[in-house]
Image (cartoon, rainbow, N blue to C red; front, side, top):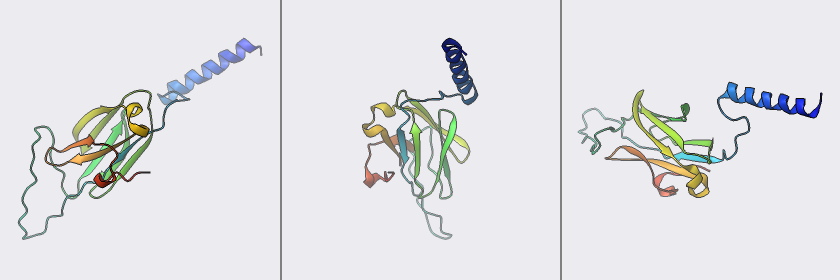
Length: 149
């Protein structure tokens, strides 16, 4: 096999891997990370009067004690977090914006894009902003629940 034939074979092999996987076989800049801070909702106690959560959003709503948030990145489910649970998504692209879709208890909740390439250390922490009920990037602050490594 001459050199040109072997290069064509390697190129064809690489294209086949891309076609089968849907992503580049040798993805560069995949060292981004999203930390999902834990949220907390009190369990309802029978007979106890509970003041409902404030909802200042027209598009989202507060979770319940047994709710589950699911986070998809670029169309692939990457994390599920429940009450008092933290999540971590690593190996994300830093060379382009990634698309995040969030669902709550099986219903679409919100969607947004993040540019991990511009984030300090290629890390972003999302925490649930109560009253407005949106997952927001507010810097990497351990006091807000960002405890991923």
